[in-house]
Image (cartoon, rainbow, N blue to C red; front, top):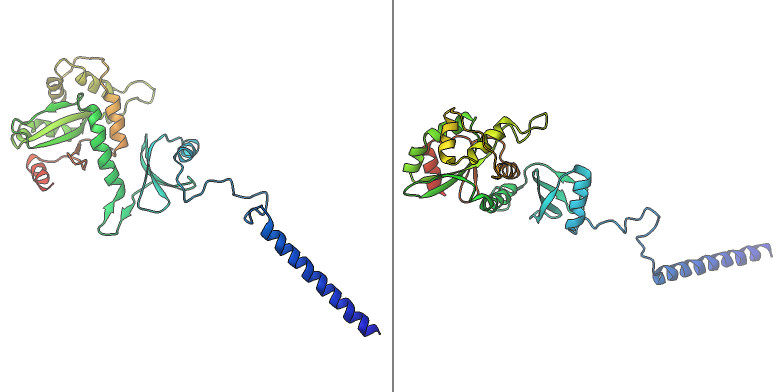
Length: 271
């Protein structure tokens, strides 16, 4: 009798367990609550890391790093965006959780610096803004146009300028953009001497003559005007200039440092 009771009781427990299991399964299938929401720490409201939301990414970079993102471009790298900021080029994950400072190369067909490809486009487009505010030494028989970020205190900038006739004779037109190596402001927050000197050159009645005088260590009359010297400097920083001279070719390629006339001519012929 006791054995029968145990058997009956065991069957009852098993039946009850099956009943509750079936009901729980049915409830899970019919529930309108997504199965991924399992606790108050759900990430359902967070940005999908595989989707690019430019406004959210800009806001996050600004809040975390203080960088102003002016433009965002997708890259061939899944989930990685190119950030064009007021301080240069960077990369970040689409949701802004990861920030990358450095080079990214494509190895698919050949070794390609992805940042340099983007920077070349930026240089070509950005130079258009200053085309009426450059100091131009034009070749009579122009074959090539080179844009040089320059500073009047730079030794190699002076050397290149003293060879301007040779560059021009080879058909190379030089266009100058201002890049005061000392920056716009000094440590006290006042305009640096380098900036004021370059501004005086750009504001001169004859900027070409003033540039030649300044690069020959001659005094240039102090001038103040609204020429975009600061804008040219900031543009240079944004597109990768970190010293002078820095030459930008017509395709946006940048060549840092002094280039002798013959060497520069040979380089331009290969483009």
